[in-house]
Image (tube, rainbow, N blue to C red; front, top):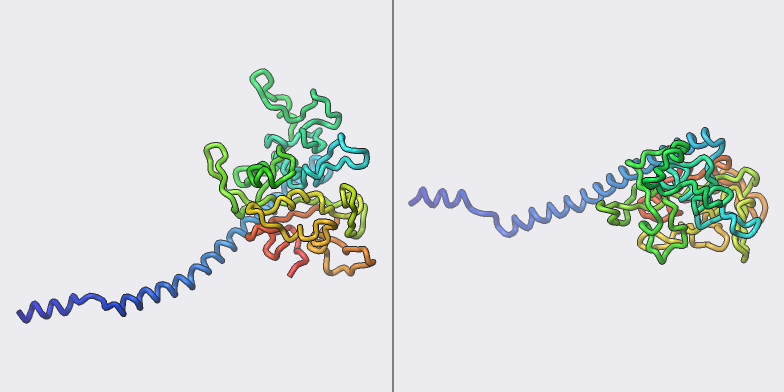
Length: 313
């Protein structure tokens, strides 16, 4: 009998206080570890996006070697009024993707003029640069003329506007693809595959004629002609207007009339502003800018991943 009592004492269970103490310790540990794990995840995503930006920079350099210049950062539409043929609805995010992959993702045609309809400079229906292949016309000759692709699409998300934004949220040309960053904000089933979609990479090519940037408010369209600034805010205006994939507005859209937030964001703070109308001198005034919205999905915030140092705290 005494042996039974001794064994019974040895197998005594935990008290309620002991269990609650253990649960409290676990909760405290999770409270410490989870933010750290999220920070590690964010750091890894930032590093991956920087690598993607570097790949795009290399791709643009290869493009320039083949074509003699960087691709434009807005489309061209000859149907518009003379002097206003810049097609801003075929945005810089889309011309970048055409330059890197081609309008149909099979390589860029050397005769492209970045028309949203895929035609050549004449607009002749017989000069569709990116025809849909068929059994009678397999595109063998056409494909043989192409350059690139300059990037590996297996490692980069490329999507159409309606796959990124709701159809009612965007005025972007529906056919032009866009390279998206690695920060996933939307899950979309495309074909038989479920894809995690980020926000588009904004691309701006420098206009080498101007010296400084001007903040110009004008009731006519386009409000800021591309010839008046080193970089033109309206090259990606319709991407910024579309909002993040959850419909939140971007910081760069807080002053849509004159683009002053954008021009301040890309301003070189080491060069003083001269003149009351000037927005200063931009960074990288002789090449191009790449802007990823970063972890928060909003263009113009401190976590943006760019190929330059943004002028922001």
